[in-house]
Length: 525
Length: 109
Image (tube, rainbow over all chains, first blue to last red; front, side):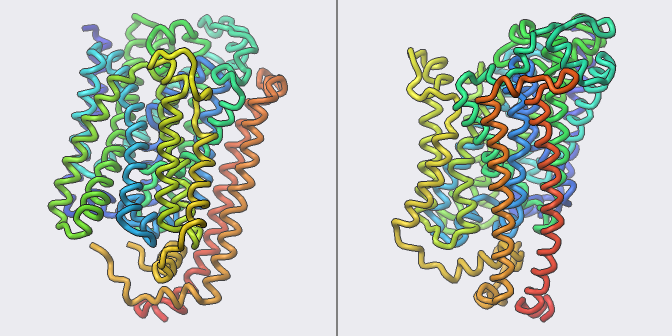
């Protein structure tokens, strides 16, 4: 083992030790289910803003977008734009009323004035589907990263990630998870800043020079770069079908507001005002990140080049670590290896933090919605609910590791987009209508969630990525990579049509309660 | 765990004129801006999909129109975030006066 590799592993161990320490502190503070699911509502707006960034800037953003930009240019950049824009909908329509009307899970909000059992059951299915796709994406990234970093096999890497995140979640709950996400957001932003400075030194801190290098190549401060012509700046290199690009764009902007694991972050702050400021902080941090990741992708395109990126594994996911290697002095040099290992360690921390947030969301759905409210009809003591949550966390971890092993070759940003599609077509309509539309009823909610989820999953299976690439069929039945353009309108339509065709729920009293509570915070927990 | 809210008269607040007018104003604001923004964003997507030559046109330096136009969305969305915060502060005051008038005893009536 080389000296640089040992330094890399030390960085890696240091990050894990730091997060473990916070988990230990959190585990001592944790008493009831309110602490486990919602960090005792103790975070400030700024802290939660950092945690939102830590939760959102996943492997998909760091490894995935860097890779997509490095290989495809403009289409990767569109991910950056779309993923930030989604927060506008979260801020204007969702964050505050959502915070005011729920306790622990998305289903608390959507079942507030509807029938508990059917809505909570359907809501649980939706959240599980979203978190699963999201989690698989993270694990695929993690496996590849550890393989690159320490050279252990992909499968064993996945199991390692699984054990780590289980410790955070089971021992520390939401408080530990939040702090892991906060620390990770800070480390990630710092690592990006260092990379940007190194890139700046090569291209004289002139973005236009970097763009020029991507087009024409050349020698910049002693580094030879790859030019790929102006075609590289063209849209449509990844999504050759314009409708597919449209479908992607809609999915990206509407999906954010439907991600269960992101929405439950609003329960960790004490008030709607804190929820509001946490979204704004999140938008600032995430926005800066998405601008910088584009620069990193461009630098990787020209400094590393498409051949080397493709060679390092599926989907371009290794573009950012490979760029760090070049920036540090190149392959085989001490500086190059250390920089690459450091960036890989950061990517790994990123993944573990996101996975912990996903698992706690999934466990909450099982223990709070399904077990406590659907099966036991609310008659469960906290101790028992806690135990179920921990078992659920374990099961979710194991299942997603197995799925992660199967789906090794996908680009992680594209995988995550499936979660956004489910969120936009089944969570988003139900959340918006349950807050803002009086006539919305139980049948409409269940129909929308089932139609949204089933249509999305079926279209993913019939899409070229799965039907052709994974199952080996001749032509795809659904021609687009992104299901959103079909599934999102269907999810919204199902909610409206089924609500109007069925009788209204007899719930005027609950409606008044939710309306006042969600828009004033009166009586919110 | 469930908080006892039986001392709050939700029906009275929901039916009050102040609350209804606050809700009406808020609904118009929180729906109009995201819907307009959605169309504005779709313009970017549609142009990326169907107007390749325009998006690939060099505007200044080595920047193409597409990248500059895309980057402008970051600025717009940040401005809209601060617009929201400003308006929401006004709503906070309105909510406070509604709670003062109709809310539970301990919040001061």
